[in-house]
Structures are given as C-alpha cells and as structure tokens.
Length: 340
Ligand SMILES: [Zn+2]
Image (cartoon, rainbow, N blue to C red; front, side):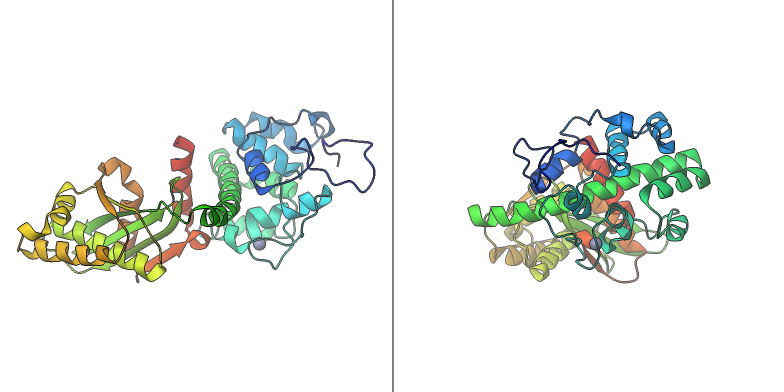
C-alpha cells in the first residue's frame, strides 16, 4: 500500500506528513481527525480497490467519507499507523495499554471503543470479523446490512474515532490547564423525570467541561417528591453529592426549573419543605468556591433529562466516566458536537 508521504527521503527519517517540520502532536492528530487538513489527493493508488467507488457514493457527510477513506488507507493516526510512518511512538494502545493500537483495535476492539458497539445491532456480525482487517469488515457489513443500517454503522464508526481522539486531546489539555492556572470551568447540569404509570421518580445529570464535553454522567431513582419543584431541588442536591464523591470542582449549576433557582437563591424566606431542601443545598455549596445557579431552557437540558429517564428503568444508581458511556449517550453527545 502506498501512502501520500514524501518519497526519496533518507531511510530513517521520521516524518509526520501534516506538519511542515514532520513533527506529530496529539493536536495535529485531532486536527486531522476533524477534517482540518484537506484530504490527500493521491487517490489513484487506491482507486482500484473494491470499496472505493462504493464509499464515495454513500449518503453520509463528506467528513465521514473522508475519515473512512483515511481509515481504509491506514492513515488515521493510530499508534500503529504512526509507527509505520516512522513517528517515534509506542505501538501499544494509549487507553488499554494491552494491545497494539491498530485501526481495527481503535475502532472496534479496544475496551473504550467496544462499549459503543456492545448493545448495538452490529455486534453479532462484528464478533465474527474479529480477525479481519478494516476493508473486510467494511465490505462484509455492506453485504449483510440494509443500506440505512450500513450508513448508521459508518457514521457510528466515525463517532467512535472522534470520541476517542477527543478523549486523548482532552487528557493533554487537562494537564496543560492545571499547569497554567488551576482553574476548571466545569458545569453541573441536572434534571428530574417521572413515570406516573409506575409511580417512579428519578434524577440525572452531567458534569461538563468549559467546551461542553461531558466528563461524567449520573442518574438514580429518588423517593416520591412532594411537587415538581421539590423533585428539581432533589436533583440539584443529588448532583452536588455526586460531584463531592467524585471530587469535582464546578463553577456553575444549571437547571430548567426557574422556581428551583429562586428557592435556592432566597432560602431564608421560605420555611416550607421547599425552604428546607434549599437550605440543604446552600449548606452543600458553602464548602465550595463561588458557584452560580443558572436557569436554562428545557430544550438546552435534553441530556440531563435523558439520563434521568434512563435512571427510571435502571436497577441501581450509576455514575459513568467517558470509558463507560453507553452508545446512546455517545450518539447524543455526537449530535451536540455536530450541531455546534
Ligand atoms: Zn486499547
């Protein structure tokens, strides 16, 4: 297989082809992944492949097609591909550290990625292709899946790679940020849900970083609240407990209940059960540096509500990190990112 890199260079030179000095950084990998660089034009060498024509005829966003073109050409920046391009890196996966970071490992088999496929309709076929290369997987999936399902598969593969690359990127950012000023602009968002038929109540929420990326997601059932506002206040209180347990600092809490915001802001004026829980929340806030409580529209609080709804049917409380987000949450986050 030929690659669009400089030819005629001395044998042992290390060269990353998206940087003028040939140096690779995670940032470059990230920029490559989000389509910052124009697609290479050396397509003639792979044009004879069976997948080529089909890939470009698919009705998926062009960034997804370009990603697949790169993945099928083995030029996405996995550790193994970088190594093959003489970039001085370790070949082992930076997430699980147990396997070689090949294209298929990164997209399907790494525990971090596999969770996105586990509960999907694709898993049965994928399992049979464990020892296949990406071209075989691509062609096999194309043959066995309906067109619409195949396009979902293609999109999700892109989403997995995107999430993975961003996770690496975030990790390097995080350490930079701590070195620079130690300030984390994190936001806690909460919501509540009810199933009147079963008389079940729950809360859910996330902690997001300053760019809106979700760091943790949580949810749990609660006992029956006395009113809607009461339920929203319980959601805030539970959210604060989760961030305490997880040792997260936040600077803001968002809820779509204006009454809950007012109750917490003026707790002394209210001696009802609402006032009591508002006082509780203020006590929890005391130990923290300044945290503001902000009202947002319901339409901006979709993820928190989805998590609360999920908690309604969940056996036990959950707190998920990046590594164990279920696929529907990854999809939801991807929608967020694609829109923004
Ligand atoms: Zn891995």
